[in-house]
Length: 279
Image 1: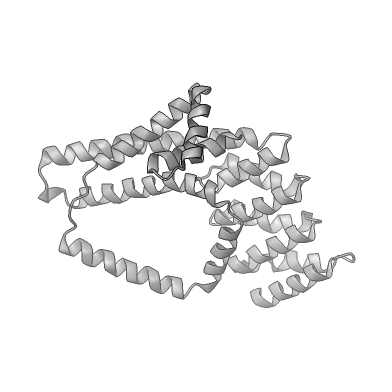
Image 2: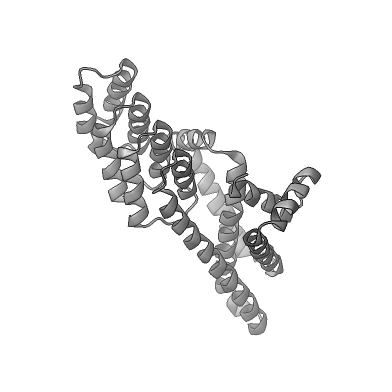
């Protein structure tokens, strides 16, 4: 069994959602794996610290601001059909159980940020001792989250160099759960996109890089990759990303792709659609 499988079981165990046979499997694994015990302990500490952070009743002003932002967000969602389609496509390709494991870290990070903002904005109305206690707890949790993410980055860098396609695919999937990527990771992903012999790895890399398209080097890399791809599936995936991003600067690359004599008919139709949308 892969380590990732047991990480999911750990999360289910801590959440009280684990089935009896899975709990027995996890315990058997932990008896033979000291690192697994340490990881479960760290997750338990993190969960306990999150539970100990007191969430105060929001003020009337805070509630009003929150619901205003919520309504604005809902309106943005209604006006963003293309983004919704992109997220739907991304969700379809995700493994739900792996996503559930990684989501626990994302939720923890969001909670830390939200509580931190609340405590600082409301500090004049709170006893100083209690405020310091809660801010200190938040700082400890944030430090642990940062360490987890740095560990994950190191793991990704290592996996991207593996000979096994399944390990490289795992690395690409893990990358999509990092809040902030660095140049080293984006360069590695672009290298994978342009040179990996496995089509599935390249397809997943397109989806992952699309999530970091706010970075100029990622957009440029995706556009340049259009000319380097031979697989119709990867070509279509890149064109879809260009359409979703409304990347008008990709039109030249799409027109050049259209000139290929042996271009797949399905790809040709998608290119023509993309050019029409982007012009």
